[in-house]
Image 1 (spheres, rainbow, N blue to C red):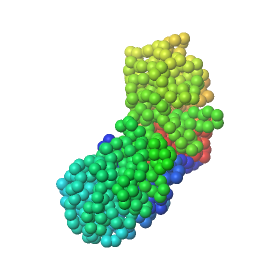
Image 2: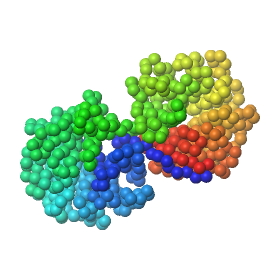
Image 3: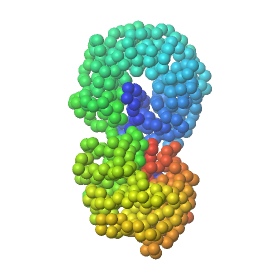
Image 4: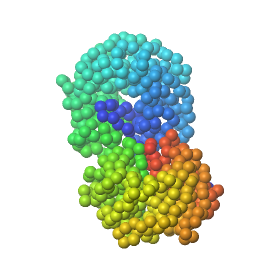
Length: 606
């Protein structure tokens, strides 16, 4: 029994309003880089469904940049750690780790020989450092600023120059190596968000929150002028990126546009309009080969079209916040993966291509805690916004008529035949049928955590925080307690009947999974041990002989019902993040989702 990772549908960049997002480009032009949480995401620029996720920083990573050689990536996190790691091998072995200062690293730049690195950010004593990549020894001092440094760049031709931009509204110009302070330039009236040298080293640009872009001589630091006269953009500018031939650049702004500039004349050739909502603010950009990329506050990555500036060639979507639940549905032979996140978004993914979209309209306003598909091909979801929603999968549109309001916060939902659903809320069980509440059972005498409706209908199992499973039956429009109680090892975290209804599997906080045989009057069939921490999710294979569990120990196990020793162990399924959801595409393919906001597919050889 073995497994291999089949595909990764990567998370989007994690965005913050008013904060620039640095996108890293690969010198060979194949990939681009960004960060989300503790992960660095490497994506193929031609086919973004091809992705690799590096999760080795114990803290949130802010920025990652390729060395000009293309062999290494340097990534920096909120604690001030820089990790330099190999890009050529799957394992991404760590080459060096440094702590240039204590505090958030906001930008990184390499010299063209890949030997020196400059980093800047929010240090306590200093805001920047420049050092040799292989020893960490200093090759100069970054001084001259009184506040956080947001951006740094190194001239990619000799003689080397270093430029920084800061919240003190100044840029500094350094000569070297060793890098020595030459002058401070205070042309901006507000924060400087981005400084970048042209690839040929003749010029550098600085862009700020005042909506201006200034041009300077790359060798002397003398001012050459500004782009767009008075102002380059109506809003603050967060990023600029040069064309490979150094004659043009793009700028990304909070005014929800990206502009393409002709540097020689200082005029905008094209203005790309990316929307009208707050989430359409443009916080980052990258010019790589002939691709022009920008990133919106929503986390969406836009491939800009010079021939049609009001409509991107493509927009990469996905999740930027942790995924809480997942399910799979098949129509016309094609499988679709549905995932629900911490911020209420629900996305759907083509299982083959990774193409994805989110549901349209106004949906859940808070964490989506559970999802399942009923027999009428509706996605049934429950959320911390105290609602249950039924969304028609042929339309994939939210509608106000498909919402059922709960009295208490729902934690779990399970559906059965005939339009029946049972929702577990805090302190109560709610029976629903055809999008209506039929019956509420409260004053239970225990706290319900999870429920499962038998695929044949009629029976409902409810797991409690007291480590017991109680059986109920649906009688007409009510739920009736059968008086039968099953014992498990600890507070129940999840439970599910096998798809043929033969078994009931229950996971608990005491790291155990217990399987009961339904036909034998729910006698305990076997217990499964292996997880090192509480088990949080469970899913049955369509073959009814295997089931998967995920735990707080970052492990996923695939178990065989009839032989507890026959199992597949997937350690670090989502490194440093526990698995939040499991679903089966088919008996040989398992889907996992996690708080790293990624969706992964695993091929199992069972």
